[in-house]
Length: 430
Image: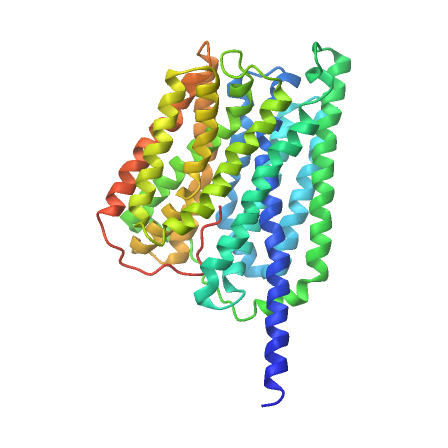
């Protein structure tokens, strides 16, 4: 008995260290994902793109969820946690290295290819890291651990647009009074190179960090056995399909706003501020989601999830409608405020679906993750709306429709009871 306590203490210490290592991944992929927002504003002017062409950057990123989620589960089962995470990080670094090649060739499709590769690595990272966090400790504490890690993910999405705008939307074609010439374009292209090479270096350091800690991670996760089922097995559950449609609409609505918000705030009829400043203000949109997640966690202890989800979807839809009908500061800050009500939507939709789906939790979870591909579709539609309108306000009809349909999902959930308990090994990855 005298050796049991020290041994338990060492195991607990190893688990805590592994949890800290893995939590850094949540911050990293949040940062990378939100960097797309200022990047789209940068590429639009540098490559002289339409809004529809610009939003292809979001499509290239989020389509990876639809393509890679299922193969990623197979990679995880074959490689194990630490090696799958390292493979994911190496994929992200490779994608970052494609960007300078694309800019040297002055080839926008190359940038889209790079974003797809980076997002593929992020998808594998999420598939591995989410169940790993859930398994690093007691089952009863899995939701608290995941919420803690997701807070750092939200911190990454908040800092990404602010720091990215400081690099991507300054100098070159974005300097005061600058016109688009070969010289100014070249300067802005080098800024894009620098941003992605720096991000590649950041992920390379994390890969080294995880490699040195791989034994601790694998040892701590040894007791975590995650069942991996194909998302195709969830097609037999109406609730799984209903939840997947909700995830599709939510992610698509959220990303549509984030993708075009920099240009929207920059518009003469909205805030009429420089692109760099507008890009930095997008941080408040994502920061609102971070704050709202903390508030929402407290409210969910007192309010039924379906009811709170309905309140948030109605408020988000109402703000979208306000943006379509107003201009200036009112429209600008109404658009930013939508982030606050986006906060609890993804994890709440996720858990409400898991509680009602008749399919295996891992299969349902896989289908919901695949539905994140909505972020590839709705922004593209929003881009087409922007190209066909004299102002960008009508773009918000796209997320307005999404939130209206999400309200239907929320009301139906509020009027039904859960039939399953949420599987701790199938957490929301957003």
